[in-house]
Length: 83
Image 1 (cartoon, rainbow, N blue to C red):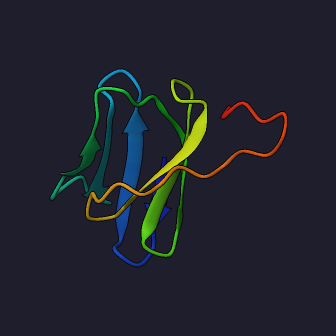
Image 2: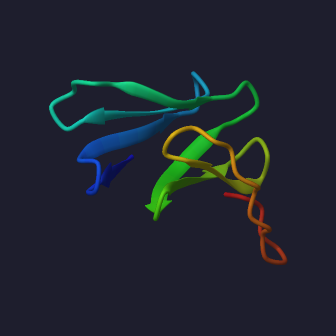
């Protein structure tokens, strides 16, 4: 869960439904950012126009831009496991 100051939205990841969604702070205008069968989003944050999350199924740091375009996974440091 994180708050996007620029868009004035609350964004969250749901590992059960495999989705990342955002909505305005009053709950209106809920939108799907991404829905992928093979993700397990956990611990979200944002940097510029991207949403990053640790992914326990891929053992990586995944990202998507705020409009839903998937980016390349970040390489983990030696000994990192994505959690």
